[in-house]
Length: 73
Image (tube, rainbow, N blue to C red; front, side, top):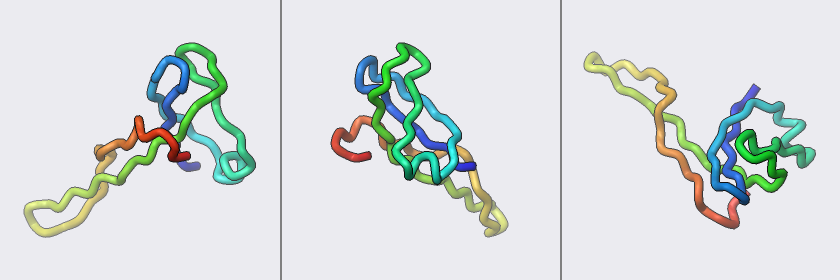
């Protein structure tokens, strides 16, 4: 199940949640865990890729986030 990152429109809290792609596609959105607000905006996150010293490629959970870009959902 994919993880989505959201930012609350009320308190600016950034949080991550897991939800099915079909739930997200149907318009379902989580409430902010900090203040309970229902208006949240999806953030765009990138996947971190690590290249090892031996030239191998592995995935990493670190990566740049993209919260705070109003108008993108």
